[in-house]
Image (tube, rainbow, N blue to C red):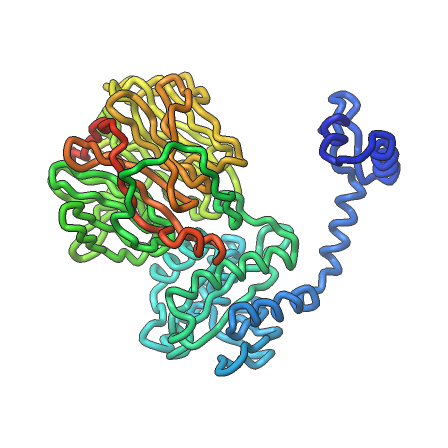
Length: 533
């Protein structure tokens, strides 16, 4: 940053700030780049930070958080570390009344405890694979994971969610949830875990506890963690145009509801919950919402003309039998990239699948955009994306829109519908961080682009020239995606999330994770179904 920017941010009188800055430079904590006229952190600052880590006392730093968490969650909370191929309990605090007791020094298996799974999920990939190869997946209860594929699916879900969950996998009647305490290199130096009776620490309370553990783990080390899914939603604002006919048509409480897509041939809306892995089939006429639990992360649904379904999973693009949950691989654009996962997907005007990817924890811009033809031929179209999200085309197919959520950008490309060629990338719209982040998108018949604004309590509509036309206020902070459907494509369906929302936000927005619908006054542009080659 330049002097003027630093001075403005400091809020100090200019002479005072100048003296402080000169002192920091003299001690090597700040360095001036004279060629650029900017100031950067100096070598001495980095040396001091290394000294702090070299002498970091994890147990002492965790004491205040253990006391606070045990009181707030009301369950036993423990500090753990990796000990060879086991997890060891270093400290514990028990909640009031009937609590799960943990002996300090006790060791437990990795594959069936929340603390063990989170420590395994965040290991360096090479070390993680080596540990996985040595593990004996012994069954302890009927819920214990006993296959490598199922364990890997759970670890991928843990990375995406930020915490792990064990539902009676180690001890019958005991559930647990755990978050990693990350060191300076991003690998875990420990883990916080909450344990409680399954009757109390159930599916409704386990996720709020996970959010509290994430926040506490970050306070222990000062680590910010991944940036894509924040823990502090923006305050609600009332700036948009009220939508009188907006309603929550399905108060489902999804952790991360996403990827709505309308199957016009069957008059059904498909959508997913990424973090509670399932594909849903919703009938607006009856209100029936059928579920297919997949057992592994699913981020998008692609209906086919013959009634079958393709899904974007952690293992690639797969055919899904909705009745049985069985999956068969169709194509894998990122085979071998274990730290990445696929995200949003759509069928383009060319009939091909367009699908984006992202790093599981959204910590690096390692995502890409791919085009997958009906014969499973894969072409990479874009790279360097942090969180690839919404994909849509103008009604003519001449413009492709693509969202990168973390920088808050909606890109536009020139598109050739017949060949799938794209060019001339430019910024179509940018959402300031203070207003939220762009997520899923859809285009209407007039060429307007609708975008769900994560942490923004709203959906925006942009004119074809990128000008903000109007907004629809929502009763939830985290809308995730939009799709047109229903009769004449006149209904706008909106998915939402409740993941990592604190209790205060959930009390203000109890419908978070629900499915919403409204009549925006304009019909949607038709969306193609996949036609098998």
